[in-house]
Amino acid sequence: MKSYLIIDGEGERPIGVLLYYEKDNSYIIELEDTLDEWNAPLMFAPFVKRDIYTIPREICYLWVKERVVPSSRQNIDDILTHHNLKSYDEMRILEISGGSCSQDDMYIRRINKLPDYVVERAGRNVTECFITDESHMICFFADETVRKIDINELTEPDDVVKVAGNKALFETVKIGAGGYCITFNDSIDIPASVLYMSGAEIPLKPGDFTAFIRNDVLDTTQSCELLECSRQNLAYMIKKDRLRPLREEVNGNLYLKGDIIRSRE
Image 1 (cartoon, rainbow, N blue to C red):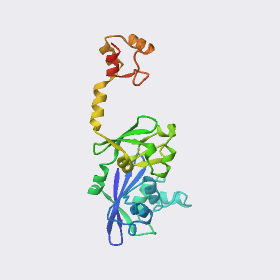
Image 2: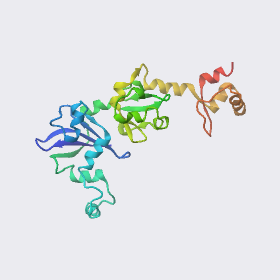
Image 3: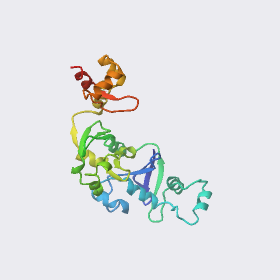
Image 4: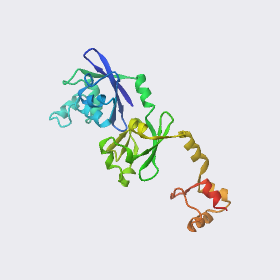
């Protein structure tokens, strides 16, 4: 991750931080909460008006795009050659220009240490997320809290309604860059802040889930050892529906320890 201070040249006042995640080619902008809708950049004003200072990645991408020469520029090849660029790279072009734009006085400057407010907000970013049924998810957050979210109860962003009731789309869920959101099909994002505020907190820590997996999920070899049987006997038990794998894999299944113990009764 690269980080850049966003500075308003009029008064040389820092207004936020641009975060760039190279592997995902994603941008996140964290604005200072001292901004209001009148002194915030025009593109971000509607969010600041609603006290949203972590800007969604698609809006951040648009902000970056409007500050760099477009790839469709007629002389783009000459521009890339002049700057020793082998291919079009928005972030590299933004760095070369310092983030300057004719539409405003803002520019960017590379920083190595994040401001405290950015670090504090990151404590509510998502670290793990998985679905439990057709409408619920469990999310782990960086502050060690665990929350259960009902996708049907979320009212934002607007296109979340496309996810609710669409099982195939719901199952594509993954964590977005930096844990700032979860994303479905890499096209519909739900900010971590929305998940944090909407989810019902579960009185467990992520470490409790890890401990459960470590101690109560067994592979085929461990299950055979506990049952004192062969792999063929284990397969026979599954065939007779005396035992159901937690997860079936080509190289071996996973089982719950409790199910293995109960199968001996």
